[in-house]
Length: 163
Image (tube, rainbow, N blue to C red; front, top):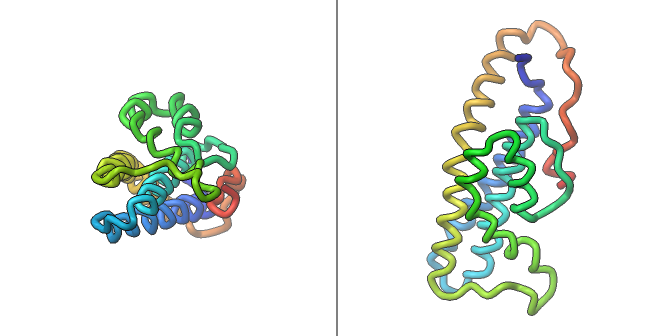
């Protein structure tokens, strides 16, 4: 297997950073009863971005979507066991998809934000070890072969700035 290109590593790092920012927002806000809906939104965003980072390392292209169910369908051929483990995260989709206008936001009942946070944590905890292993292996391989420019093609355009 060829080592990943620097460009691919950078895209994956960007997805992880964006997911981590959303996850960190949830950690700060999860106990604020006034922020239940924004917690739900950031839970969905974190899970979505961790999944998109994983799809990116496997070279799976995806469209601009916030529907976790769609992303999990793309993940299934790559890692069926992980897809099954993450099946519950589909419950987060309405909080990233249906929040465009006032009154469209799905209601989060008291305590529901904690359940949604558990789903975001499940996604992070299941995916991050795979992402970290990929990044660590890629960095060490690139360090060993950093004598010249990479001859590898650019990765698919799964940039966080495009999705």
